[in-house]
Amino acid sequence: HGSTSWFGPVAVPINWLLEDYFGLEGIAIPHGSTSWFGPVAVPINWLLDRIPVIKDIDINLTHIEKVMGHFGDPSVMGGIMGVIIGILAGYDIRGILTLGIQMAAVIVLMPQVVKHIMNGLLPISEVAKAKLQKRFAHSNFYIGLDCALLLGDPAVVTASLLFIPLTILIAAIVPGNQILPFGDLPTIGFFIAMAVGVHKGNLFRTVISGSVIMFMTIWIANQTIALQTTLAAHGGMLKNGASQIAALDQGGAPITYILEQAMNLTDLKGFLIIGIFYVFCLVFTYFWHKKEMAKLAE
Image (cartoon, rainbow, N blue to C red; front, side, top):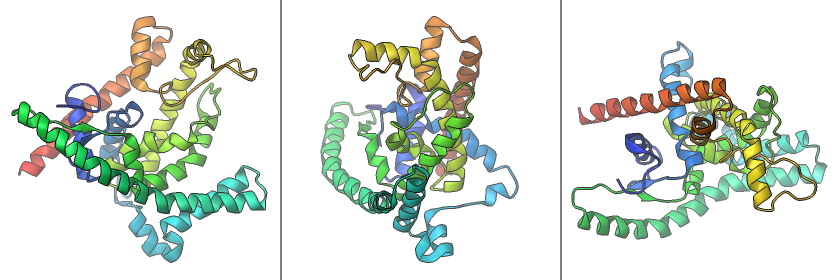
């Protein structure tokens, strides 16, 4: 394959998911913060399918709008969540209402903005793909594009807004946590976008798998604070009296953590737990994909 999500055959299920749910045919998302969390949602989805009552819960935007009427409209929900977040943040009335309007605007405008970006990028990617496949006739190429494309899905936008307060709550229960993840909150959508696709837009399941993803991300980011601080110091980014720096994106990446621990082994227990869990998710995703392909073939 051409530009794939990450190593080997496990990249293929994620590329297929982009076509199956997001409708992005021939597109790959090579960004780690998006692609490598997809396999975490797959076994969770399989498990939820086997729990009575829970397996039948399907909370998606269509159902919400039918039950709640106009209050279930994504823009109204965004406005309500913005107001709630503003209240929790201690804003004044003006700030609360402004944040509510901004949240509503994001949900309405983001899909439209991304749609126009896609309309501009897809013709280029199609020509590039055609040229590559003409030169390499027996290969199937995917064109790597930015993970921001997934933020055009309304369910991803809604889930991202839900995880702004949820991530702060999760950070409060992570053992030994030293990170207040305020700076990373605008990027939460990248972490959970693939989970939305795995769960076919089911926000109930996305909250469950997304909570596991964010818990793991925050815990790993705590273990890499020293490395992130060293990197920031060498880059001249430790300013305004800051003595430490952390990041959920690359700092909370499971593959980065596994590779770093494999070379330095400063935390054997964490290395084994994260390593075994993540490898299990990768293997599970691979065989899940083979089974899904077999169903489609039938």
